[in-house]
Amino acid sequence: MATDWFYLDFICLLHDGRVLAVEYKGNHLVGNDDSGEKRAVGEVWESRSKGRCLFIMPDGTDLEAIRRKVAMQR
Image 1 (cartoon, helix red, strand yellow):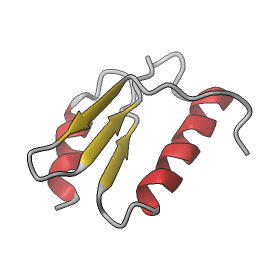
Image 2 (cartoon, helix red, strand yellow):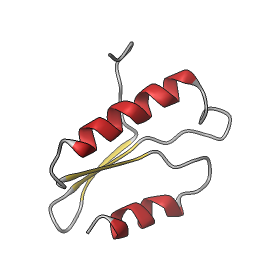
Image 3 (tube, rainbow, N blue to C red):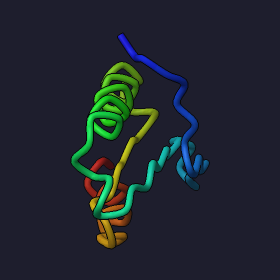
Image 4 (cartoon, one colour):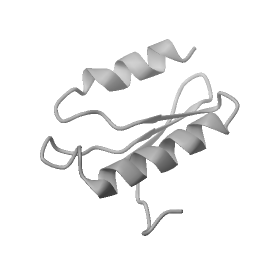
């Protein structure tokens, strides 16, 4: 169960109709409890979407992870 509200940083409608949700955390926040909880919520949301939704929480400055996520999930 989540302990707080969760406001994503970016929500994108992709050209193929999928929805991409991005939650960005700086390197100093990636490993804290709040980030872990948000990652878990996002992963459940993605897993229950039947492939229509993607969730990514890139680690620090690894913004290329977003591109990899979109490309891998096709």
